[in-house]
Amino acid sequence: MKRESLVLLLLMLAGVVLGGFLGYLAKDVSWLSWLNYGQTFGLTGANGTALVLDLGVLTLQFGLQIKITIASILGIVAAFFLYRKL
Picture 1 (cartoon, rainbow, N blue to C red):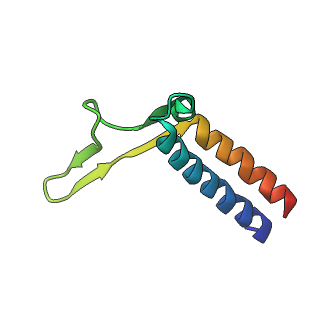
Picture 2: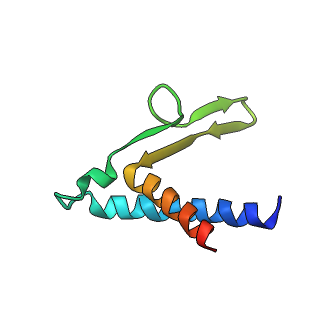
């Protein structure tokens, strides 16, 4: 992977995390609560927990959840523009 691609990937991940954090902080502010609006999707079992594969001797749990919010999308966009400025 090229260095530039790695920098872009890291900036995008930082944008998602920082945007999600800011959206979480803004959820209780009435005029900013829309930033925390989003959708959670992922790989879970029937009751919302991780998928479990029990082989008797070995038990494996699989789970992945991603929550995309308006703030995290804005964080990705800001990270992309920051990358373009670098």
